Image (cartoon, rainbow, N blue to C red):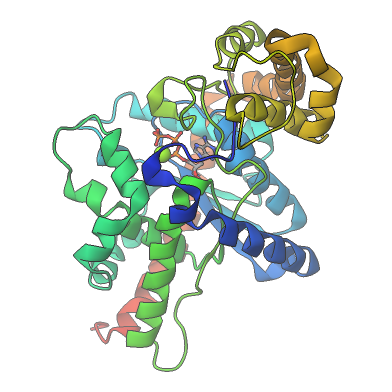
Length: 365
Ligand code: ATP
Ligand code: MG
């Protein structure tokens, strides 16, 4: 497996996604979060299409727990409707949803403080989609580079309306709870731009001087685009991922098969040697060191030594997460209770926001 900050494909080039601006903005936000965590509310989430992996972990999950522990209120959406953006049937949905809850508990999300909920259980959230759709043009949706990339990887021969409107749906996910901070990977930046546009336009059109919605910011991590074993974005649906739940042996096997290059001397050169740089970054994140330091340790020992280091670092780093995962996994009733309570909390928040939206739109009869 390899990780890099380089683009995954021409349609998701770093420039098109505004990554450098988002990185600079993230640094400013970090300072503000530390000054006053109570000013922030986070919404973020995942599609229940499979197990969460290292790309999720270093791209967004680690930030979720860190923000929660700093005192930021956290909402985690399990986006079950959005599974259908790129396939006809949502296979094993119940199992995938439970596995996502399990992953979050294992990494340290605390259901007493955080709200973990499913899309389909919060009807008022989905009702925001209709007015929001009126705020964006078809041309704007057509330009979205992440939608283009997801269409390219879709399992469907035709693009559904749900795929096309995915970013607007996501705007509803974020804005229903008035989140102002969204810790995401690089692929989500164009979607977040749509959410920002929707918030601004709704406020301009209906706000009457008082904004109804905050304009949310993306928060990027040090690894906003981790690549999978095949050198493209690590993804649940592309069969190229090392999942958090993988065993130590499975991790070793997957890392051994990761793409590298033929140069023996290991140096950190993200632009020239993205695969090697990615592996170095992954080991460095697990060890709490810099990729340059990890590279200096390995020197001329070559790619196989690098892969051994990556495997050991990942397995050591994830050992406590995997142990907690196994423990929580024995109590399925608890997982379902976490979700039930999260759904209730999310419904109350969504109902209140929808009432406000109706008032603002003069449709409160
Ligand atoms: P799918 O293939 O089903 O779309 P996915 O692996 O792309 O799955 P999502 O549920 O779409 O995962 O994404 C959840 C969150 O994780 C998003 O914020 C996304 O940006 C982030 N993320 C996903 N993959 C990576 C990755 N390889 N590197 C960094 N962040 C990632
Ligand atoms: Mg995805």
